[in-house]
Amino acid sequence: MPYLYQTTGRRQFIKTIAGGVGAIATMGVFSSFMKGEDKTLHLAFFSDTHIPADKENHYRGFYMVKNLKKIVPQVVKSEVHSAIITGDLARLEGKQEDYKMLKKLLDPLAGKIPVAMALGNHDRRDHFLEVFPESPGEKQDVKDKYILVLEYPGVRFIILDSLIYTNHSPALGLLGIRQREWLAEYLKAHTGKPVLLFVHHTLGEKDGDLQDADRLFNMLQPHRHVKAIVYGHSHVYGYSVRDGIHLINLPATGYNFRDQDPVGWVETTITAEKGIFKLHATAGDTQHDGAVKELTWRT
Image (cartoon, rainbow, N blue to C red; front, top):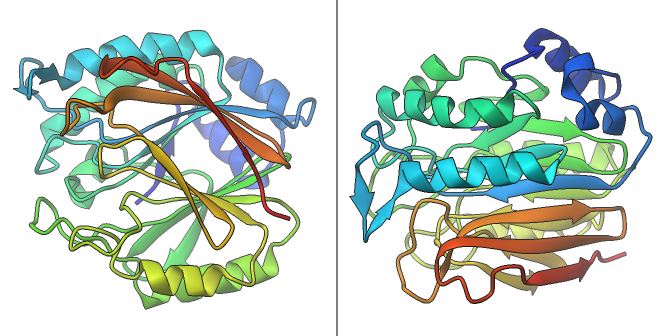
């Protein structure tokens, strides 16, 4: 379930995103971008923050609160237009106290730029909504699902909802028929811009993956304006292609499962023709810190 929040100028920001254009006096570079002065979008992508209420909570030697404290100033310094987190925001069970800590950690960033979030299998809708009650942007009316469309001058982002159960094994995800049917109709009616999809779950065939991934790709075949899908869940950083669509698996911000995987975030530049992705490896395997991957969108 996606949400977007801003700690300053929030009401004006809601109106601006809903309309797709406009200016926000308190938002600096983002305001300039939304006026259409620059159609190159500069973003921060991160995933699987797994923030606990207890700042001393740790896993495999990683302190999740300390990790995010380290990353937020980096993102602020990068002067990105927006940030997107692809789920598993909370540590394990989506406790309200976890989200309060997450909000505290994100506030220095959300005071400057919009921060969009999707929910993963370790999140809980009710607790999340109590701490992040607003859902600006173009929220779509799909029963039991929360879908957000973010409009920018040169690109459109759609954040999907793959959450079924909280802290359940296997940690599977599902879009469901209503969401897939909505997406098919929406993409058919909105063809003017490149589209990137965001979802939490991985897109393979394992028990913990998105269970209707094949149905999703079958549905996407005629919609060539869909250029990429960005997701997390695996705590592995990687790139692949399926049916011409680029698949971008973000590294975890909280911790890795394997020593050879980086922990950190991805600085991203999006244009109508391509995406450029720079890894910021702040922990775990940092040997590829600063590595850049450039992807050309299908036509």
